[in-house]
Amino acid sequence: MKDRKRSRQRAEQTIDYGVPLESAMARRERMADKYDYQFGQERVFPELVEALLEEIPEGCDLLEVGAATGLLTRPLIERAGRLTAMEPSQGMLRRLFMTDLSEDPRLTVFYGLVEDLPKETMYDAAVVTFTPRRGIGLMHLLGVLASHVRDRVVMMLDDDASMDWAFLARAASIQGFDTRMRVVAKPCDPSVSPSEAVRAVLLIARVTGWCPEVQPADAWQLEAREIEVPFPAPRGAATRLVRYFLAGGDRAVVVRTAPEGVDRLYGNLRTAVHRLGREEATVRRTDDGVQLLRLPKAEE
Image (cartoon, rainbow, N blue to C red; front, side):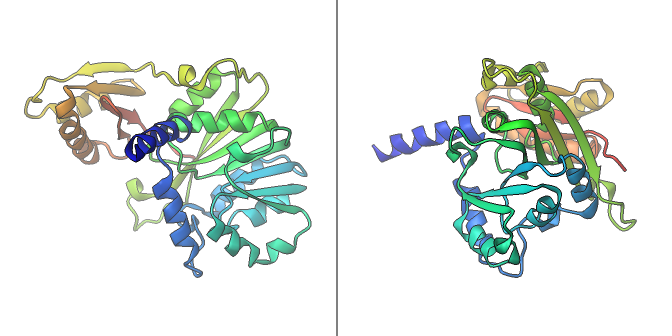
C-alpha cells in the first residue's frame, strides 16, 4: 500500500514539478547548515544580476521564488518597492532571518511553494531563481505564477538545456505569453575553456495574452524530428547521429530505440556530444527516448 501511495505521489510530482523534489529539498536543507556558504553563489555573477535587475520594473510589488539565504534578495529589494521572499526550506529561512534583511520593512517572507500562495494574492512581477523543477514542471510553475502576477515572470535558468528552457519559451508562447530570452555570460577567463564558462538564461514572460484554457501538457508537446535506431544499435551510430544533428538546422531531434536499449544509447550520445560538440548541443534522457538539443549563443 505504501509503495503504491509513493508511486502515485511521484507521478503527481512529475506532472507538477517535472521531477520528484525530495532530493532537491534535502540538498537545500543540507546546504542551509553551511553557514559560510551562500546557496547558488557559484551560478550568480555581477553581469547576471545586472541583467536580471534590468527586467524588473522599478518600484514594483515583487515576488521572489526560491530566495534561499537572500543572495539575490538584497539587490531585488533595492530595485522593487516591496518584496515577498518565498522559500520552501526552513533551514534557508533561518539563515535569511539571521541577516539584516529581516529588519527591512519592505520585505515579507513566505514559507512554502508557489502552489501554497493564497488564491487572491497578487504581485506586479515575479522572479524565479534556479528552480529544481524540470520539463513540463517549468510550464506548470509559470502557469501558477501567471495567476498571481499582473505584468511579468522572470525565470533564471541554468544554461545546460537539462531544464528545456527553449521548449519552455515555445510552450509559453503557445499559451499566449509574450516571451523573450536572454543568455548572459560571465566575462571569459583565458584560463577557462569556453565550454566551462558560466552562463545563465533569463526567460521573460509577460502575462498579457496568457490563455489558461490551453493546458500545459498540450502546449509542451514537442515538434521535433524523430529518428529510429535499431536495437542493438549499429557500431558508431551515436557518433553519426551527433554529426548529422550538428550539421543540420534542427533545434532538437528525438532519438528512439527499443526500451531496453535507451540507457545505452543515451550514454553513447552523451559521449559523442561531449567529444564533438559540447559547446553546441546537449543531451536529455526522456521516458521513451533521448533528445538532442541545440544550445544558444550567449551575450558576450
